[in-house]
Image (cartoon, rainbow, N blue to C red; front, top):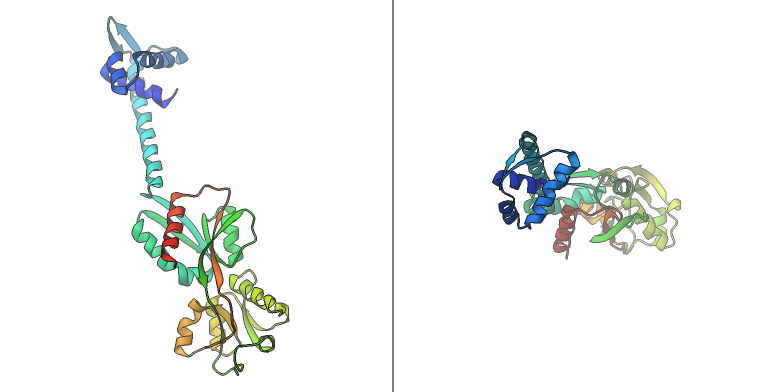
Length: 294
């Protein structure tokens, strides 16, 4: 039994005429007759009385007509749902982002997306870069945003923004003469993010590129958030490398100092699973980001 057979049956039942039903459905009369015969033969029932050139529903046909109409109505509703999702009239987009991105870069992007697509339900989880990648890989989130790059063959990565990094120190810490050199960086007391953090991995990559072993740093504290690291620097516990977005207000207010160090900007990447179909909502969000970023 197919939806097409049901549509033909309902049309014939309502018009009580094979030829008229064929004309309304833009089908041949033979195709209409064959569809009715297929329903009757498959189930061994008669759906119509053939009285001369007229047809009338049998008792079984009358009962089946109500069911056929209900099935077609549900099919139409299901098709409408797909159309709404495809047209961004409704839907849900589950996101995960690392802390710096979730706190400082993503909110205005999501606000702009919400203004364009108010019927899409957005949910955002926060995890460090390693945790965000794991959520996208497991399917807990459809789209992730992380700092730096992720080594996960199953995930597709797209550059979405660049993030300047800043070496910050307490005002009372003796500053280097000129840009912080390798010896100064080795000797300084450091406040680090936890393992798995994109901020920490970015720092370790920078140090390694300069020939400095991250394991040889003098680590004063390891903390699980950017706010905690910045507060520790403000309290005089040591130096840190953080996003310019994180430290801008503190630097402007004088609670920390930005030291010249020649640090490269790091990349923000969007992550999605390569084997899973991309929703229209994901495509719309990525397109919006491309239009907003310089």
